[in-house]
Amino acid sequence: MDVAMELLKGFEHSSILLPTWDVMILLVVITLCLLFRWNRAGLIIAYVDAYRWGWVFFNESFKGLFQTYLIGYYIFGVVVVLLYLLSWYFSDHTQD
Image (cartoon, one colour):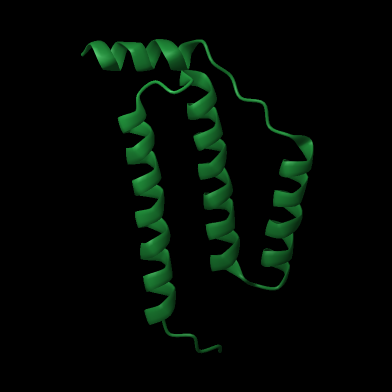
């Protein structure tokens, strides 16, 4: 319970600053994906970028504390990417 309260207190008093160039590149890439109907690629790019922003936020906010949570965050991200790659590999790629 103590760890949960520390996490909540850390989230309460933290903020994240996103570089403008990073957001602009993300918007351009997602727009190109939607324009060329690469919906899955656009979704995974948005997910990975949001996941990276979460990693930056979590790492800067807690400055090395809660290493087990960071390792869990990393493992969860790798598992999600692996599941995406498996679903992409086994999906039907036919176009109408």
